[in-house]
Every structure is written in structure tokens, then in C-alpha cells.
Length: 351
Image 1 (cartoon, one colour):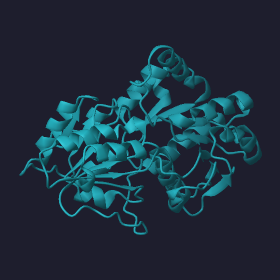
Image 2 (cartoon, helix red, strand yellow):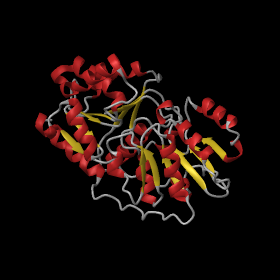
Image 3 (cartoon, helix red, strand yellow):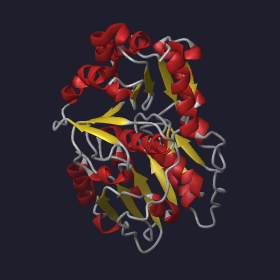
Image 4 (spheres, helix red, strand yellow):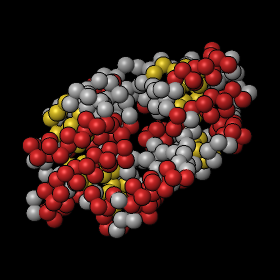
């Protein structure tokens, strides 16, 4: 049993659907507790997935998990990201020893640059409570696993490293209209965490009139970003077409993929771009960034350093700048690794 608030387009939910597809294909019964089917990700829901729709996208609606778990008796509960671990805590509190094993995936940074004072103290205390209600933690990289051990104070043997399954092209996706010439690409929600205003400002500073900027995503910051584009008088070279069901063709054709977030987990856009041989410039928004981006495949800059961001963009966008070789797929079969972990945890419980 797993969960999601909606299908509006978050990376956590998108990765969860890819994993659920693999588990269903392997013959497992997967039940999704879903606030609402609304959103573009609905078209990515795999056949064979059992869905219990709550009709409410509010986070509090997911607190029905203990009741639903009692009714449907899942062998295991999978929490697909940090955002949802409050549901795990509530489920353990209500069900106690009758709760099935709970596995939670780390989807975002555990050290948050946007938190200070009492907020940061409370967040650290919250992280350190996770070993009480999560049987096991999954991290997508070794660096994230080490961060989970340190910040959650959880035993290393209760943390596994399993990457997300790779994103695959979608033949049924509506094609993204691409700029006619060279373009710089950003992929991700238009939310404050992503700090796309940094990329827009840096783009405006580049002396490259033949270059366009394409931002794929949707979110609450759209109005502010459009206002910034208008103020900088670059609207003729900036495209914000919204959510893209399949950003892979845009990544393949981009001169560069950029990420300017304050904090991230293991950003899928970085992995997907490098798999295509597209260079990446990213802020050091996660402990995993240096594990993902090698010097020959991109550059890492400090968050908020506009000059460093512009310099890195100029380097990789310069005429004749080499493109990295496409990164080979990892040796880990994510579907099989998850199922092996689930089976081991259930065996320990005698389930």
C-alpha cells in the first residue's frame, strides 16, 4: 500500500508510479491511497494498480491510512517521500504493533537551508523520531544514505540505497514545442524551492542573443516568473509552456540543462539529462549533487552565487564546448531491489 495527494505533477508521485508499475508487472498487488486523480500524471497510472480515491487532496485526508490499512490488510506500507512521513507516524501511532512494516524513501534534502532557529530545531527533532515509526529507509544515493544515518540517527543496517527506476520515453505524450535554435532548459515545478528566478536572471546576463530559455513545469511561482521575464524584456526568448508529460526529447535537444534550487533530494532531471549526454549546471542543493555530476559532465555552483552561475553557463554554452558521453545505466534493477527489501522485511515479521 502506498499513497499520493494528487497527480498534479510532482517528481515524488511520478517516481512512485514508475515503481508501482514495476511491482505490478512482477505480480505484486499494489494499492494506492489517492487524494484525487486530478492532474496530468493520471495518464501515467499503470494498468493493474488498485486505487482507493478519497476525493480530497488535503494532506489530512491521508490520515485515513490506519483505517484503510486495517480494512485492506497490506503486507507493507511504502511512503514515497519525505512529505508523506507524517502519515507513517500517524499510522504507527494508531496501529501500534499491528501496523505492517513501513518503508520510507528519502526524496528531499534532510538539511534544509531554508530553515532557521526554532524551525530548524523542530525539523531535526522530527527527523530523529523517524526510526520509531519507519522500519526501513531507502535513499537514492550513497551520500543521501549517509545523511539519513546522520540526521535521523538510524542504524546503517536499516538504510538501503536503491535508485529510482529510469524515466522512459512516452509515446502517448503530447510533444513539447521546442525553440527553433539553441536553448537552455530547466525542468521542474514552478515553486519557490526551485528558485527559477536565478536562472532567468542569469540567462538575461548572457551575451548570447541566439539562445532561448525553456522552462518545463507548472506551479504557484508562474506569475512571479512571468513578471520577471517581462521586466527583463526577454519574453521573446523565454518559453514557459507548462507541465511536460515527457521532457526527454527536450533534454536531448538542449544545449544545457540547469537546476537552481535551494534544496533537493536526488533530482531526476539531472540524472535524466546526463543519461542523454546533455551537460548540467546545478546548484549544490543536495549532498547527492557531487555524486551525480562529474567535472566532465557539468558544473556545480553555490546557491545564490549569480556570478558563478553565469560563468558556469558561459563555459558549457561556449562555441565548441564538448558534450559529455551519455551516462550508462546503473547495474541495479530498482524493481527487484525494492521487492527483495520488502520480502526480507515481511519475513522478519513472519508475514
